[in-house]
Image (cartoon, rainbow, N blue to C red; front, side, top):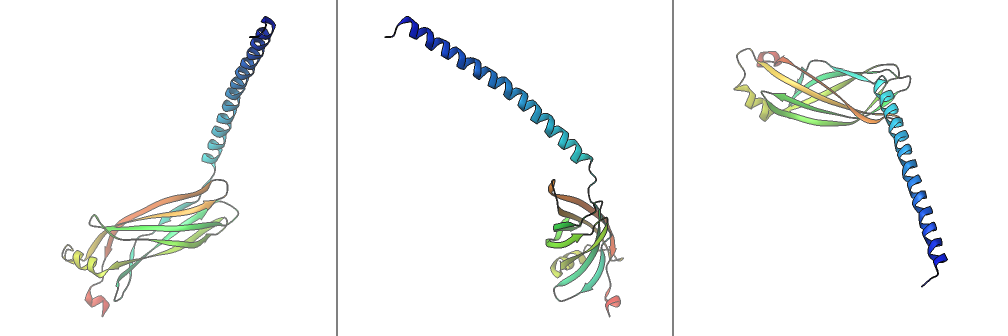
Amino acid sequence: MGTGEDDDATTAEQDGEDDEQTRDVGGGGVMASLVGKAKGFVTEKIAQMPKPEASLERVSFKSISREGVALHSHVDVSNPYSYRIPICELTYTFKSDGKFVPSGTMPDPGWIGASGTTKLELPVNVPYDFVMSLMKDLSGDWDLDYVLEVGITIDLPVIGTFTIPVSTEGEMKLPTFRDLF
């Protein structure tokens, strides 16, 4: 057992530690508040920055081959920045009559030019088995209702990668045998 003086010294040391812990917690609250305000400021500034935009042209018939029917569309991507931006990938889904027809990914389709608009061609290959299943649903006018959804994933410095979603829908006139031969 210790003397009364030792007990008083130990109690005083413990009280000092409690005060330091209280000050650290209080300082952490101020620091957390500052970090929270900084995050809010940065988020607001990033939200106000101009970002690349995209538009999608209608889908049109391109060709017929042994594998299926080739369709295509153009994607216009505008870049508000004075430097070119890499496109990581282009993903697409083509739907007709509520059914997913083809979907796919174009890895690394290129770059968006600085301070301008870049036009990308998007090929869509529809397999014959799906075309044949649509034949019975087509009316006499050979019109095909469709929806094309595209996601353009780009990589912006500071912000990181993000995807620009665009879609188009419409009606496409399929070629008849007379048109092909």
